[in-house]
Length: 299
Image (tube, rainbow, N blue to C red; front, side):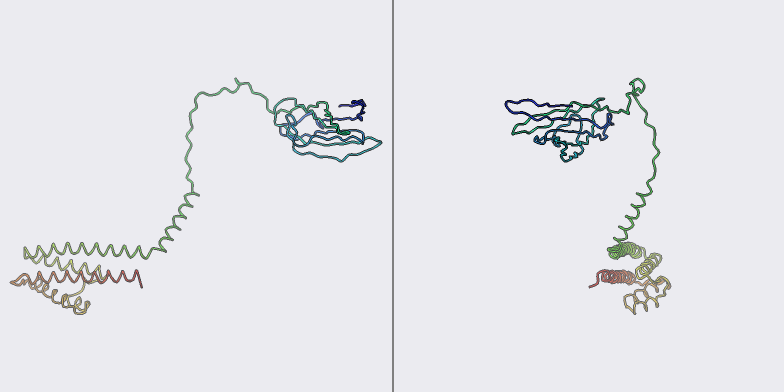
């Protein structure tokens, strides 16, 4: 507490001023708020200004400032301000001393309060180092892996949605391309195997190779047309292909040679018939391939 009794400053008399600062509690915890009161009692003719928020509050931090209007009673004016502070410092005893400014007739005088202290309540007790010795080496314990069903489930759903979307957008195109690929592959394999049987018949003139060639032809057209042509008779095959002369004449020549065990003196007749059957199979392949392409890309 500071009392300024009347005294002379040059020829001018300074009015009496009393400035007092104190904490409302004598102890505080780390980070806990504590209130500090600053009072000033002075003559109504004097003006006392308290510290603002820009002032350093020692080891404390300012939380807020509450100012109360001046009250005058029996010729004494009283100013009061409450500062809410908190501290994060670890000193056991923390002290605060503030100063106010006295303005009187154009002069300024610094007025300081008496220091006031609070005790820091400490909840953590220092532990001797030898009670918790550090281990130089440690062995990691194995941790069992857990299957993340949630992430895998979400991944499976996302993958299903992605695949479904791709199929909706491009499914028909993908299916058509696959069918065209299978058609081309079957055609190439048929022509290769058919030509081998035809060449062997031409060189060896055996009915086994002739019969094998016609069987290959019927089986290939069965897959190509998706019809049981290999179970048809020659007449039924001719009717199915609308009396196409290439089919009718070639099958008759081959049937006469196989079932009648008759090979013409000029074996080129049978060989030519086999060539016509191969050409007809290629013709049917082109028709079905182009039809499939037109369905996949309508205009």
